[in-house]
Length: 278
Image 1 (cartoon, rainbow, N blue to C red):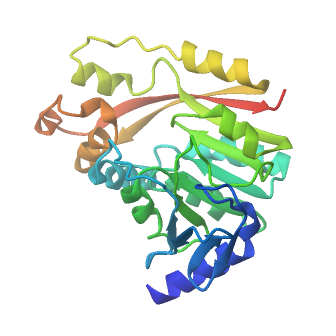
Image 2: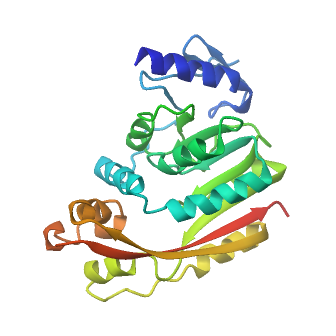
């Protein structure tokens, strides 16, 4: 724990110019193990090496079990083709500062870190404290913060790339912290995303899903550079099917996990939207 806290201190100190106080918007500096502003608003680096920059006691609607299951499923490789596509984009654009807004338990950002090298600076934020605690269990040099995407604790024009993977977006804040030549990558579900799981949970009701509204908002807020569809099938072994079900809010209070028997094949249907400032 001490080593992790020291590593985090070094990372935050090297990148302290990125941060602004979420209370008064002033610049912030690292003093010992505390990020503080000129008005003495302060936020301590935790023993696990993350910063909690929330100004209110926000309670995540998602339980810890969801994030633990998601981590195991990501480790299995469910989203590897998606991550490979994003890696290709990153290699072409050569960003320096990367923000994963709504990073969850951090699996996607860790995979990008491992495959894109040390030359970039990575920050993962999520409003869920439990998810960030899980994310800090990784040994990678990533800055983890509990923060709200509706009030990002970063200076304007700080990031070359903002990732928003299967998570809610706040475009006014994203555009504020994005550099003028920066890019936003948003990943949204396609109409067939996890259709097999939805068929079981809803017993063939509510099977139709449309990303029209989410996609339209992206097109409204940004100059769209490209749209990439990623679609494939993935087999989850029986011993991890319960994790597949638990990792998605689809199942909350709706289903007995014991009805799933044997291996389970799901369709992963995603769309990667690339946008820049208009």
